[in-house]
Image (tube, rainbow, N blue to C red; front, side, top):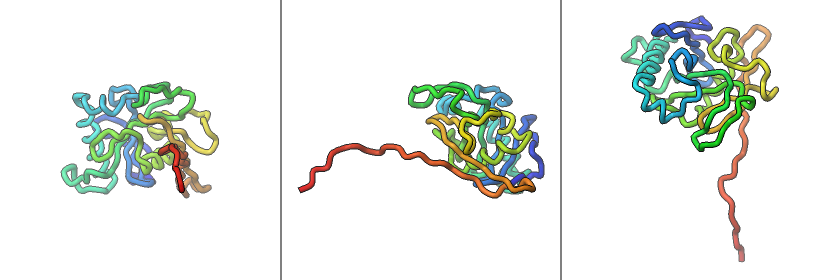
Length: 193
């Protein structure tokens, strides 16, 4: 679960939590990166320094996690990196507003160097694990009163997702859960003869 052996490490002077649950991931606080946690993917893309800083942290974390031997050999796909922040109201990519009291944590994830328009499922599962580790970057941002007793509700650029994590009596992660909701894909009338 903690490949570096620490709940918190520091890369480029930024506190980070390295987790391996679902996928190896690195979590940092958005405020430590100098941005609002509700920043949308297009704004991450055009920020003059954010992607470069996040990639530097990701590459250093890769070495610390034992994924790569040096920065240059770090795979593009892992570890994933995400910025987390406390619950707050924010605008979705659709223009709608998510109310802060309907999420436990706001997440902005990158996948293969690109801002994700939602949150990768494996990153969401890792956030669920990290949010239950006292002192982790996700734990620091999550609201104490959970929106849903079944897990943690993550707010992302396209909406929200409910995920959960269970630990045994010794503190080892036993499973991570993703709760899916159905959405309408199409509507219409079929005429059958």
